[in-house]
Image 1: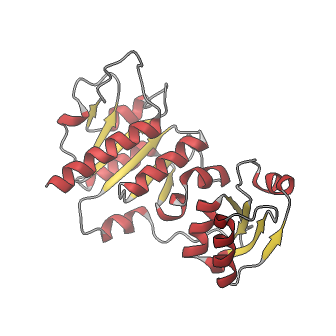
Image 2: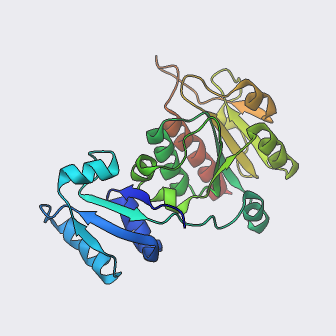
Length: 246
């Protein structure tokens, strides 16, 4: 059995408590926090039969590796992968909407990207194994539960994976400040993989070359670029707008 992973914060632990309570080994809670949110959380945990352990804020910070635990830290078994990327795509009855992240190494950025991906109904998020952050406790906290709900696939060769997506007739659309075509000129109603790079560095050269086309987000002020999670939100919800309108 794999070693338990750490989840912290009401959202991250609450989603696991709701979706897979049997996977939770124990939940550490701060007994000094007696507000309504904590009382409601404790009631759900007790109903699920999860073991509760009282711990002060310092111990919780050590367990979480962060002071942003909100008085709640859980140790839980990793959930098994439900499917492969190929199986997921084969099972879809609607045009896929995928988010591909190239070189996003900041856990806060990844967590925020997963959260917006969940909100936009993205079918999967894809990232390279060597140039990306995996799902850790900070990612899960920032994602507010989306790390448990959005399939996240880390692939060995991103360019090859993009090539395989293209073979499935999934349009790979890269975001680049240098692109002459605007995001709002692109057709996102069909099968689409939106490919974004890290803030500053952008897409790696091979990733950029592998994309079918490149688009940019219009920047009308003095700032030259947006945070990758903000850019993801803009791109994904433009796809949602187009698909709902259709």
